[in-house]
Length: 469
Image 1: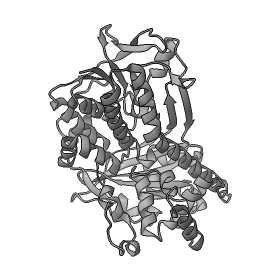
Image 2: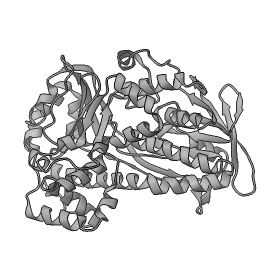
Image 3: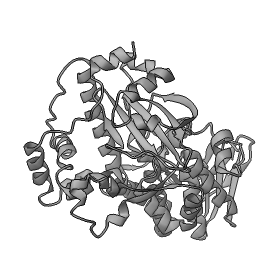
């Protein structure tokens, strides 16, 4: 049995802690936020202070891949989430009727998920963690630094030191401290590194709020969940207990669109979009919130191809974080936690072997999703920037971008290409893998060339500016 310390008591940290505990390891989770776990879903929404999660009450999506992980590793947590009111959602159910006539096929059940607000997901998971008999969760506890020893080769993390001065030994420290992880600073303070890092502003700003129906239903989607509307996008996500998130996503450089911080102007823009106006037909819960400065960032604790240190595993957003409008964060974090469980099971007894295996597994299973997300962000920003400057968006030239753009048209004319697109949105299969399959790229380009691109009804750029004047 190994002693493992998990830093961060959010979705990734608690999930990893529970998985590792059930494998027989001695695990302690440290969470900086001191607020106790609320007793009810509504108390979680209205009262829970989670300062460590900046987007706590903005839109979240629990993709089918995340549901699969819970089903395999923590089925009781999935049951608790459903019992808390999570909404069942079938992404194949969004298929246009003319394609759905072909009928279901084996494997379509993978596209089902249960989605909920972030406070609901965290409350269900945190209560399950509190009930885990051998898992210790310490809230309101800040970690000051790592403790280390100088081994032959890379330094080795031996545990942590708390702000109180208390030290705790560990065979492995898991960094689940999210986007704001201090790990790079800790390494710098110890004269280690720097670790490899790629970082860029995703370029988006989000204006969103939640609504609730009076009868427990959620609005019918009449278009893509993330719908491009010229120089902005609309994100619509059903949630738990008759609630849903409605979000406008714009370029952070589009100054005039920042007027949408005004709820009346935000409403006016939604009302001008015929396929989305009905999402306003509910009771607003919470204030209209704005969030910008969102980074696409990737970290890898290597130097010259070798681990900078052993005894630590960056997990989830502490490893890489991406644009949240694609809704991949929670599911990628759960996939990463499952990956951690597997690597710990095979390599925990050899620190260097563990570090190398953890890096290899992360690169193979998680990094392709990071790369795909960043590339899609850049494609969309180039399109937005052209439109807001009165220009025709430039045609993509790199083959992956050409194929992604073509798929947006082709998916409306072939049920298998619709499934391929949804497999990416569901965090089941990256598009790079799909397009590598025999004939898929050719079929995508053929259908895109023979059909007009989808144009969703909404205000022109001139009409948008008039609404915000």
